[in-house]
Length: 112
Image 1 (cartoon, rainbow, N blue to C red):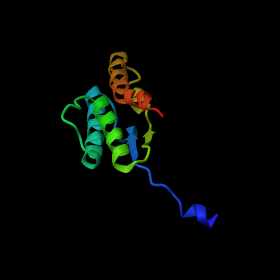
Image 2: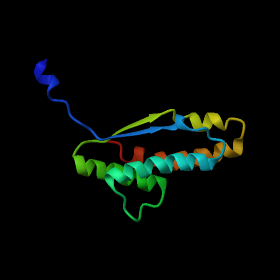
Image 3: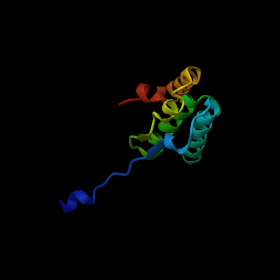
């Protein structure tokens, strides 16, 4: 048991918490996502060609893996907050769904 406790691997962790804001418009969601991506890009870098949320997230994940040699852990808290906050506005929900779909699309593509 003592030997096991000394062999903890350290993984790069990307933590996204959607509970930090109220989403009364799509720009709030874009701002929250962009701010988090910028924080991760300060650590892992950014390519000039990464001009969408999905390309930026994919690039961050790839560079985190390349820089550490470890699989990347992605924690997403309160992913449904934007949808719940816009519950009474179907047009806004549709826009939020599109933004979230774009942001999360790399997760399915790079799943290993």
